[in-house]
Length: 296
Image (cartoon, rainbow, N blue to C red; front, side):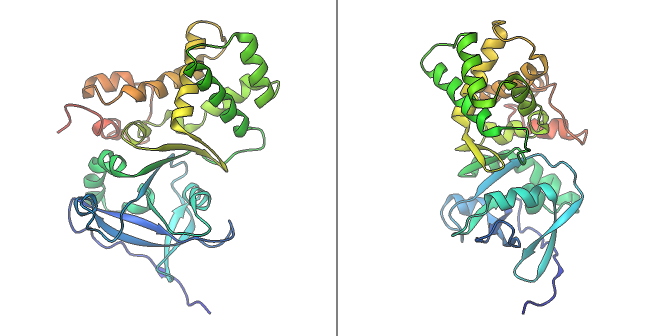
């Protein structure tokens, strides 16, 4: 019989190069309690292969409601409060058979320690760059989303682009209608209206990451297919082949700009991504810090 849970207490990080990594335990059932260990890892030693772990994967997501609504059980008997969105994404990322090594800011940074957060936030670009994979979590799929169809449609658009051609409006309407239903324009608008795509922090998390995968509920699509589909849609809207996508077009422009976001100074980035948002005012700068060529 398991004993009572005690409140988790963060231990201070040993140096500016130290991060925490969540070692998420496997589970057979989606609804099983979330269990993990929290390991301190020196990034320099990790790059030299001298740490207890060899790799970690980073998660890019939208915080949504920051109120703790669930628990992560650490070291079998410690209770670490987590938000509902983190709870859900951990369940979808959790393996049935093996441990998963993850960096998630809502867990790996002590949110009550402003001094630690100031140091860690400045390192976030490097943390994502060092991760072997980046998982972009868009949230759960609602009954009306048809994310699977949207992903298939974007992949088809990317394939058209790889063949150096844009589809005709008739072909696009036929295929998108086949994948997403007769109201496909609404499905596309709804997909890109997700809060994630307006979040400024995602810019460096994606731009500096490797082997990025877009995830929404049980569905996933590689960044290469995703960005190819986005570029295709953007070009069709630019060419006035597709009409009525003004707000979506703005989101597409931001996503496409991520591909070339590491070649600019801070002032240019502030202008380039002026439509992206942060919940905290000073994060307007910090969120671009890892991308700017002139960042100290």
